[in-house]
Amino acid sequence: MKTINVDIKDVLATVSREDIACLEGKGAEALDKVLGGTGAGSDFLGWVNLPTETTDALLDDIIACADQLRATCDTVVAIGIGGSYLGAKAVIEALSDSFAAYRPGMQGEPKVLFAGQNIGEDYMYELQDYLKDKRFGIIVISKSGTTTEPAIAFRLLKEQLERQLGVEEARKRIVAITDAQRGALRSLATEEGYKTFVIADNVGGRFSVLTPVGLLPIAVAGFDIRALIDGAAEMEKATSEANEQNPAFLYACTRNALYNAGKKIEILVNYNPKLHYFAEWWKQLYGESEGKDHKGIFPAAVDNSTDLHSMGQWIQDGERTIFETVITVLEQKYEKLIPSDDANLDGLNYIAGKHIDEVNKMAELGTRIAHVDGGVPNLLISLPALREKYLGQLIYFFEKACGISGYMLDVNPFNQPGVEDYKRNMFALLAKPGYEKETEAIQARLK
Picture 1: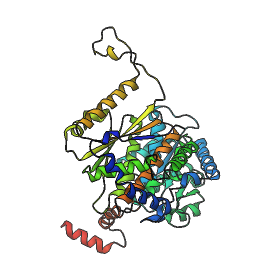
Picture 2: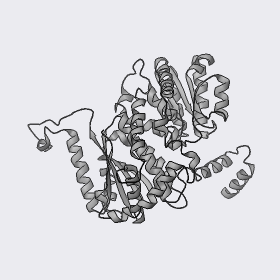
Picture 3: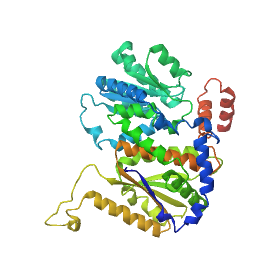
Picture 4: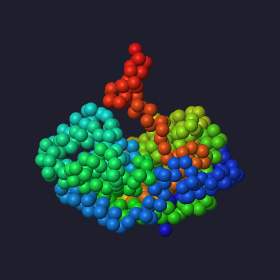
């Protein structure tokens, strides 16, 4: 079975195998908490067995709903923020043609766009202007239905869809993914008769990509969600024991050893431009899970070789508080050879006849050697190919490692108390009903 692989040899100049082994006891305790539900936040561990517990009936229902949207829409807007959009965006971008957005639409192959992930007025104006002559549908994702960013987007797009199609037809093209029983969106979906899927109470947003939250937009985009779940199920089984054959356990112990050695920033590096949004998903997963109690590794990301011409200087010669986790994609979907040129003015004939990916791999290897020589430890994660099965493996690998690593830091990996601070201030500044005292206090601060 092809699977992802984790190689730690290029961290051993900074932390020894003994340093990592010393953390294995704590790592084993952390894994037991994840598997047994005995740690802080254990009521949000529904993702742990999700791949093997996902039923064929649920996948059939998601695929049937996706097929209905694909048949009736040329554009589908997925509305959500944080984990309610990043996972789907990451997978769709990784699997899509890089220039799909610029190609003419095809019947039965709708474009999946995103809204509710920002409060950009120009963004929403331009999106609605784009949708004026489109047969569009909406997937609205919110447990409560009152989160500000997606609620604004849904109010605008629902009104537009009803205006363009009429209320009855609009209802057929709106799907709500929300709480099973509670909340404003659940009430509206019941009243309007929208097709719905449930966000389980025990799965937090940043761990929700393998639920209908991520699976429905991915299926609408035309990708194989069964293979995605199958890959995740393989990794679920491969990460069940506390040993070095468990890649999530090895990764969690290694990064914590590096953290203890003063490496406070982890840079996720890819050499495939299709993985940009995967890194964005990873940043939320680790930043929101581990950044607690003034602890945690700061997650950053670069897209190489592009960022070697910007961030590369800092990584090579800047403050030595960083380490890198490099994702290498072993097999490419297409082949493209570099041609020879008689004039050879660019001096590239020495690589004529080589695959572009061979040059890319040598850029990757050369950079890893240079960075390790410069004092930047490197972990290497090898991904067999950008396919649904392997992305499912990678998603679950990072999720399981995140749970282990968070418990090793002695934080609750499954809450996000700091996220609420900006909301309280925003509501106070906007004079939201119920926040009168907060509004008075914050206005006094601004005088």
